Length: 147
Image (tube, rainbow, N blue to C red):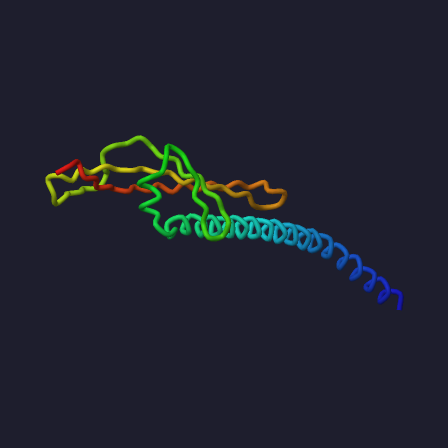
């Protein structure tokens, strides 16, 4: 009977020795999982901010009479989109068009307007992330030089 009690005690000691490394492995796996969830959350926040910013910049492109606004705008102005976002449009001083442009009239002269629309947003916990997007718009214009 005494030998049987000693065997039971050895099994308990062996089980305790095996449980310690298994517990350490479980704790480290839980920490890795927590870090993975944090990274997934950060990527999700950034993607959401990027989608929002892309939507705002697309609204600039579909403003009614954008070509007319660009042709008459002063050196710097702002355009209000449909969702109450104000995006500053800055006119750059470049004369030649990057695209090939052929006018069909001898009296028509071409001119180009280059406009930069900049917008930025913050995201993540405590607004730690910052994302900026610039939209470059080239608007070729024809003007009548007389005749």
